[in-house]
Image 1 (cartoon, rainbow, N blue to C red):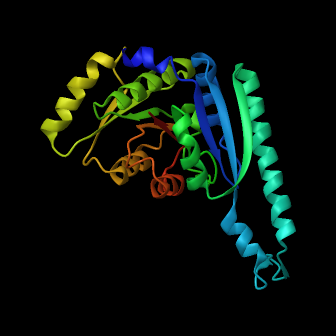
Image 2 (spheres, rainbow, N blue to C red; image 1 turned 135 degrees about the vertical axis):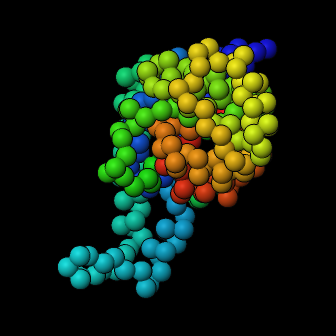
Length: 257
């Protein structure tokens, strides 16, 4: 089965939401992808257990710009998390219904990384970094930024490349091919391997100087794409890697099995 055929067999895209406003442009793009693939968008909002534990401490305080302060009640934190979950659900519903995609949404209490880890086995694509990113006033709107994909030659990265091309075609965005390699010769080999899987040449090829996740993240910070697609390797599908990508990437990431 080709990577193109396998991409068509995707049945679920899991979206991780945290305690911040979701990236609406990314949600819209993923909803259109799900509709094209006839896949389900499965939203997961995680009520951060650590925040709730902090709110329960007697020394927990909320400070205001005026210098005033007040104690934080755990009931206040729970209401705030419920409001944020409702906003995430409404955003997912709006994006999915506009695109004609099937969607589901659940709320879980725990850590984002742990809850994702419990669910990724049932998804072919996992989206992380949809919330919690500060706005950069010098960054172009995501509607005008590229779709970036890291290609390593593996079957999963071939599927990621196919999905990136589908996003490029559906959204009219440029496509940037990231080539993680430890030497120029290795980079050229990977590029030649990618060519048969490309329907049209990418807008740009960017060589990443190593194969570690941190190097790919650094490249993404340099390029600032709208979305980054990666193969869901064992090193990426860990609690630490989820937290790292959520904190350090300038855009949401799609992890493709």
